[in-house]
Picture 1 (cartoon, rainbow, N blue to C red):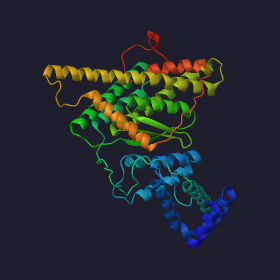
Picture 2: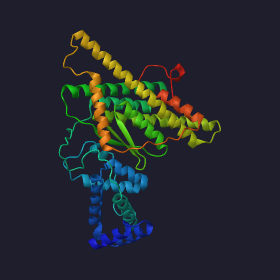
Picture 3: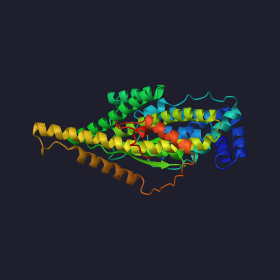
Picture 4: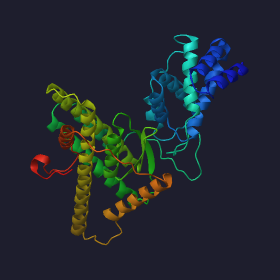
Length: 401
């Protein structure tokens, strides 16, 4: 039956258009005996994606973006069966696999439709480009790479996640602000504690990377927001607009913080935008797209300024606390690692890693906001969602754009 599959693949995978898919699907639908081999080859396509640097969430994201939810279910089934053969998976894979949707039943609603959807998926998988790897593919352990041991989520991260979930759920802006502020303070302090612990124990830990989806619409504003969150948490973000994600480079605790905070701020911003837009529509305006674009741009820009200031404040507080402790104990000049040199060394390590991963990057010209109402509401929403600092916002006269 392999010649049948080869003929179907030749017709469907190496040509464009629906005619080739129809021809290939007709061949496969007429031969039920090829089903097992057809899915085995699908697993091979998935395995090639791992070898090209893709992760499960990346594959699902691109399939959803380019095809439809039927194809997402199909690729989820292939990912599940392909990764089920490995005793050990790279870090961050387990949570991505747990989030996969359920695979659809085979050959539904009929053999032809199912085969056509499967061939369309294979065509996309076959053409996936190689991207920067953020870890080894499953089943391999490249020389010199040390995988961190598997462990449960740290208690601090669980607490931060709970605070952000409450901030997203509450209907009271003041409560959301307080919860998000506390979460960011915990993130910053946890990052500092991890850096000092690594220095004291002479840890050989190196920066890693993860990919975070940046989906349309208004992806430029979302990428700017993610970049601001990454910078405030001692990471670097590089946006790939063509493939719909940013690669974030940093140490593991900081990567976790970036993913959590970005996701939460995006949820909070979207909720605030929807409410503001409803008020604008009630007043008779119809320019929804320009309002949303300007809202999210202002939201991202404003939060960038505030996040940078909050990070500097938390670091300064930690530095003052360290100096006071050393003075009281009479340990100035001891071998205890000092905060600022430790953080500077980690920043340099992150920059070096990002430079090796992305030796060539380009800047993107950002289209200016054209809707004053959208900008004003977005700025106000960013102030309500502020993630640290006790100073006043716009109403207090100290805010800036």
